[in-house]
Image (tube, rainbow, N blue to C red; front, side):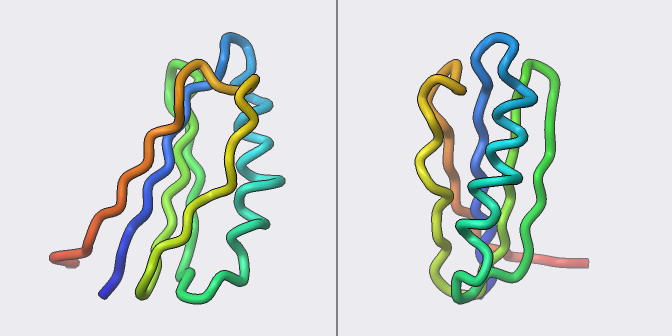
Length: 86
């Protein structure tokens, strides 16, 4: 079974670039080499939001804790099961 783990955070005012850099420089390297990781993508959205989506075979691991000073609110996390692909 393939799982998608979504991690979404809204940066504190003016800290979007720092949050994006933290995901690329800390969160992604921490996940690399974790058994079952198939791929990872980082996206940004208006409102200084950063999204990390990882795809897993088996159990999905989570990104490390984000420094609180980079965040406007707590991180949101969801795990989805793949049901259909075209």
